[in-house]
Every structure is written in C-alpha cells, then in structure tokens.
Length: 398
Image (cartoon, rainbow, N blue to C red):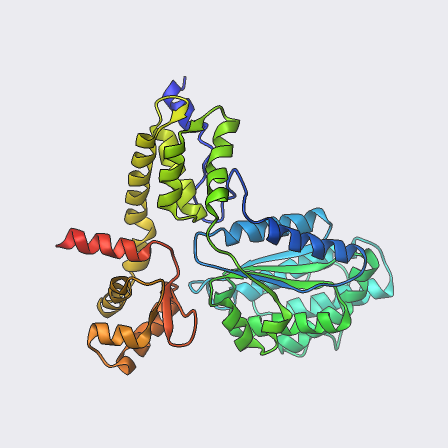
C-alpha cells in the first residue's frame, strides 16, 4: 500500500519534459485563436496563411504545435507530423512524409470512387513511391503515370497539391504538415514544402505547412524561398508574463486542494523567469517538498535549488559537453559579456583572437543547436539560463 508521501508525489500535477503538455495551458490564447481561424476558413472553403512559430527552447513551441494538430484533427483535417533533427538518418524525414501520405491515400481511397478521387490518390502514390526507402504499394490502384513522378521534390509536390486540392475543397477540409524543429529539416524538403505552400496559396488549396523552430527559423525559411517571409504568418513565442506564470502553477495546485503561499509563487516565478519548462520543474520539486497542503517559501526555495541541480546535471551539460575546448571558451565569452546576445566582433575582442578565426567555431555551435544568430553578426544561446549555468561552472572551478 502506498504511503501518504508516495500518494502526495503521485498526485503531483506538474510535468516538466520536452513537449509535455502542462496541466494549465496559459498565455498562448492568441496563437490558438489564429489556428482556430484557419479551421473556420476551411469550413467556408476559404484559405488563410500558413503559420510558423519560433522561440528559445523550453518556451512551449512543441506543446503549442501539438495543440494545433489536435485542433486540426478534431476538425477532420488530414494531418502529417514531422520532427526534424540534425542527428536523424539522411532522408528519414522524407520517408516519414511519404509513409504518412500513403496512409492518407489509403484513407481517401476508402472514402468512395470517382475520377477526381482516383486521380488524387494516384498522385499521392506516385509522389510517395518516388521517395527512396518507401515500400512498394500493397493496396488499391497504382500510381498515376506522369503525375508527381519527375524525381524533383518541389515539382512533384506541386502536382500533389493540384490533384488533392479538389478533394479537400469538396470536403471543406484541409491537409496540414506539422513540422517541429523545422530549422533542422533538410534544405531540399524545406524548399519543397515552401514551394507547395506557395502553389496552394496561389490556387486556393487548403494546404498548410505549420512549423515550429528556434529563432533562426524565419531566416531558414527565407533562405529556402525568398517569398516565404511574406507568405507565413510568423510569431515569436517568448516567456510567459508574470500573471500567466503564476496561473500556470497556482491553478493546477488548487484543483488538487493545494495552495502556494504568495511568497512561494514569487520565488518560483522569479527563478523560472517565465519559461514554462523551468516553471514546471521548480513547481514539481516544491510540491514534493511540501509537508502538507500548503507550499511555503521554504518549499519553493528548495524546489528551485533541486530543479537547478537537475538542470545542471543534464539539461545544460547536454549542450556544454558536446562542445570543443575553443567552443567552450566562445560560450564562456558570451556569458561573460552579460547580454542577451553578443556581437561576433566583441567576442573576438574578448578572446583576443581574429574574428575570421572564429567563423567555424560559431558555425559549429549553431549547427549543434547551442547558439542561433538573431541577426547578422550576432549570436545568442538557444536555451534560457545557459549563461548562468556557465557562470556557476566557473565559480565551482575556482
């Protein structure tokens, strides 16, 4: 039988983790409303703009993207979910796209006969089986000859949009590709998705690319196709306001008969600096530390200390440990400058090295996802709190 302490821990509502939905989803009403408008437009056979959200790690982009997809599926949309990664096998994102498209073709094929449906399904199959690694078809009619079979991803995607469009309009539905960590998607696939989106926008086809990524995503999209920055409805996702941060920890506790002392709320919210992942982690630890149904400032202080220790054991070292010696010096220089971002010239001066000799170091850290470039000639950490972690390490080493 579980002890009272074990039962208390099991009831803990806070859920820190990558992509895990918090118990109180706050501060993102504007983004949810924008996606709701897309759904409303599709029901009226009208189209809107695709959405791209970007922000630092830990601000809740993945949770928001999953909320969008859940909204879309409840509305009867056809959806595909991709999660890009620099560590993925080459071509894995394309294989996932092809397999999900084949599943959609199978679903459509069961929806009824007709030349329009047959053409759409055949074109999806042509597109999918042209992707290396996709198994041969095992259902229904074969691919449509001459459609989506050129071998060029962008051209073939346009064929797919043209032929699936009438089916989507007939159903007052939409097809959406949700891409997490979109800044890491391979460049040809990114260009193909943006090209397909452009074609859909021009021809009023309810097809949407919905992406989430680091602050470098807008530049990545513009590099793929120059018109992308005007085509996407882009939104920066930042830290929660103090009001929303308090709600995020207060409301889940109240539902389970627990309360935070005002000073305890202030301690956690201030330490988390509005970042949802840190809020969940510190609140989880404070909940476990509480002796009764009241979470005190002492519980909160302990929760923050334990949370920071956990971050220092895994979250931050995951980025620091895979950096080379020179890369660590570069990261330490950013932290020492004490600003949200730093110019490459100031970093070169800080390290007493020529700026040109640090170009490859900067590029490597961006490719590893440790840094991003908020604008030309400047760099910043992709995770909040990294500068403070480096400072703590330096203090321990002294």
